[in-house]
Length: 210
Image (tube, rainbow, N blue to C red; front, top):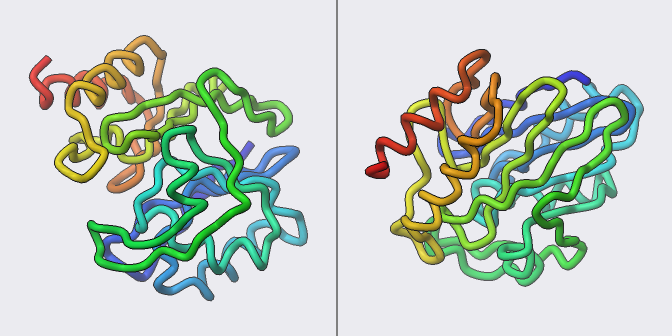
């Protein structure tokens, strides 16, 4: 499996990660503010293959706004955590960015413990609420890689002062992640950590007062 980070032309956009194995997956879509070159780059990397899955780590616009452009092009199965899937389906105002998010009724719920099969790699779904009610992370046991959305970053944690945020839930999510052997951390913003990914979890717990 290869992991390719997809860049954006918009400073506040989320990181996007394209995973290519026997099947393919895009984790998060960015805001969709500038979609055409992103779609072109993904298409180039896929080299004629189908984009099987789009997985959303949480419902915030900077991670889901690109759905309106990517789904019609790639016809992917769209997956999100149980606490946020309904909000993505419904769309509507995003209080953080002050925009209306296009509804995406195709979203299917994925919950704790489900493993998404990309061939030689199984991505385990971990429910990690706190930044939002239904945030999820994905863990690949084979490469010991965690895709954490906005739960934890290389040197920081997700905010809990937005609607649906909860500091105690985020603390519990970080405690849960600490039990995993994390070598590489692919977070929703900021740099990728290759090696010593667990150190970011430990720092995150310190930031939250653990």
